[in-house]
Image (cartoon, rainbow, N blue to C red; front, side, top):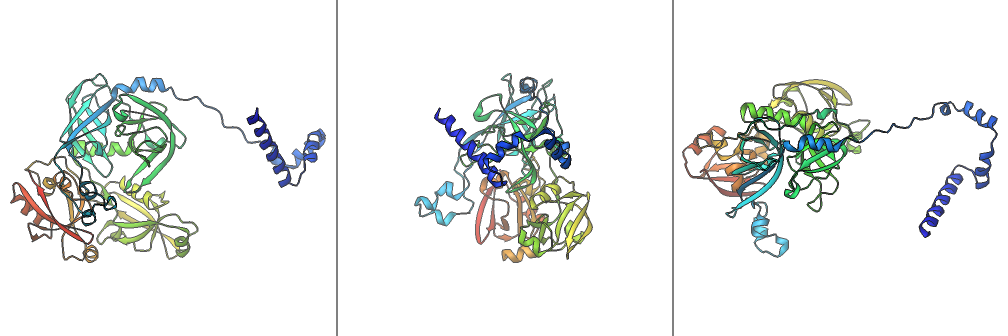
Length: 491
């Protein structure tokens, strides 16, 4: 009874507050109910907007979640992996300085040797062909020496990793089986905010778990993942869901569950999925060639705020502000300059820096792209031939592979500006690291300066030097202002 009284009190207070704000008092509000019909009709005639009241949005029925699960759960698989223990950070290995460990401050940011051991991980995936092709996240199988796929009927198969692409976080597996159930691939471009979605996976190893929600946003750019225009949902996703499918209301796969935003490590209402259209593009490249070629425009960009927009005479803070143009890149050849603001890419608006990265990322190397640029207070149009990001990662790391693949590194020479900033005369910058090099602690952004004490200037030189070794090699790497020799076992 007390709750009802309080509710009525607040309701009355709200009504009186509205009346006061519009210049009416309580008696006037009461009298308004007695206005003659003729007066009401006159008011309607004088206010044309009353002739066409806004129509309520029609109600729709919820999807048949039971049917979606029944149709697809047999095509959703569990994935378990076994690989070297992943404890490369100095804080994990030597302790954090804030914990009182006196050694921690000397090892912050350096690649350290990993303790021996095997760790096991779990994830999800789904069958896209009756002969055993499986889609999942690259981070699910990252560093794995053994991958096992478990079907809904509890059969287990050893899986071969056909290829894994870290930039998009997509991996393709193959198991030796036939006549398997498969999902139906949908069109993620047709999704809209508010659409129903359903996720199926194995959170915490709990098989065939279904959770539902809606699309909360599209085209999300996350720190470190500017290439992927994520689908944000509120469908519950937890550890073990990674790599599982996200279905739309028709039961078609529109995304691959990949990440959550969390302060606790568990689900807190914000999940992210990789659009299936992007995943299929990556899958096709992996199946065809075993590697992925990403596109590259060759600019460093930042998002504008209102102050920057005012400085560049823009009406609103939208677009990607060019802070650096890489020499001889696609952008440089097209005539892009530092200080330009990229407003559109292939006719599609660019709202911020992350969106430009996503739009360039889904293009193919060699494609012709139209750019709308804001320069000197007016728009201009440019055309660029998209370059290759040289981040292709092969699944083959056999001893007969090339030196970079044998090490697990994707490398390129530093340009003059990068050499100046790093304070070095030469070297190779690491664009991607996995396999042997990642196990040793080498990370993207590191600069390889020498091999066994001999300065290295080109990828070809590194290849020749690695081929002369059979077991181990020592790479001198620079990370920021720190240098360290890192031993890498070649196997």
